[in-house]
Length: 197
Image (cartoon, rainbow, N blue to C red):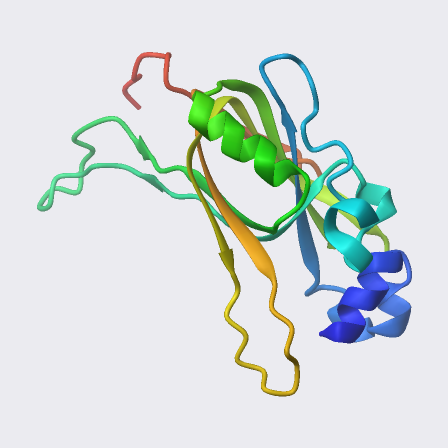
């Protein structure tokens, strides 16, 4: 894993040459945020001053995510299986290394700031061995509903180093999903009335 991170910090374009078995396995996700004043608060997030030696200059204004998850549930009748209400959208949750964006997100949570745009770009290595942005999730009018900063537990006795991480949960008014390669899209706006299928 250390070798992967080292290569990834330099460039993604040569990954298939170094690790051919990872061409179809390696994926990465990045986050960018525009606040209520129109400022990109993730600017400079992926720089040496922000996160140290693991920075990626190609994505200097985006937060590299360690993990993300999102769930949409449709309430249904236990016997018929038919919908009984509107879809329930859980928060879009991400985990990242603590960086220069963390204090700004803490402040946004305390001020209950509504951010017009939070964008997540998912990357993969395609058949030609080139990194491509194949999927995007866009949140509109997003709010930091929960934020948690902590130190990652280190169970590796050969290394004394731990990592400072932050979990952020975003609630939102509207969400848009785009698969750029397969050219499909979907969306949901909480302001729009429910429409029967």
